[in-house]
Amino acid sequence: QVQLVESGGGLVQPGGSLRLSCAASGGPYGFGVMGWYRQAPGKERELVATISSRAATNYADSVKGRFTISRDNAKNTVYLQMNSLKPEDTANYYCKAYSSGFDYWGRGTQVTVSS
View 1 (spheres, rainbow, N blue to C red):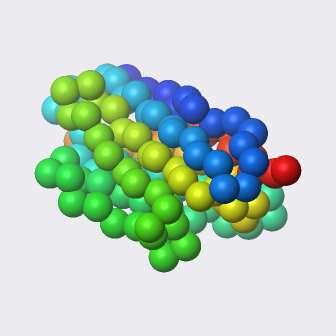
View 2 (cartoon, rainbow, N blue to C red; view 1 turned 60 degrees about the vertical axis):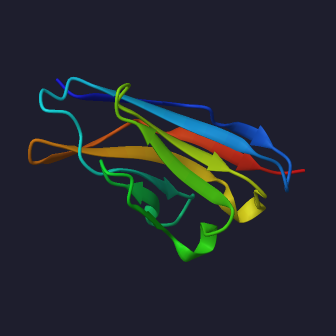
């Protein structure tokens, strides 16, 4: 049974930084593309960044230059380093991972950017 567990969210002031982690387990053949998505109140869930098993990355325009996605394949863990945070980055951040033909989602971790 695949499980994704996010951590690292919290309250941070504008201009600050946070690092999110997502530990995946239960994938019998490992994990392919992993990524981060976010959903703010009243808005649809949107892509933040993805990373392939070979470390090819893709970012939303709104976070390019500020966020960095990385992964540790040995630990089945994906990270999101978020710098220069803005109030509009406030959202619930979800991890997604592909394994054996299916996409799996974590439960999310809240990021609030406010002074």
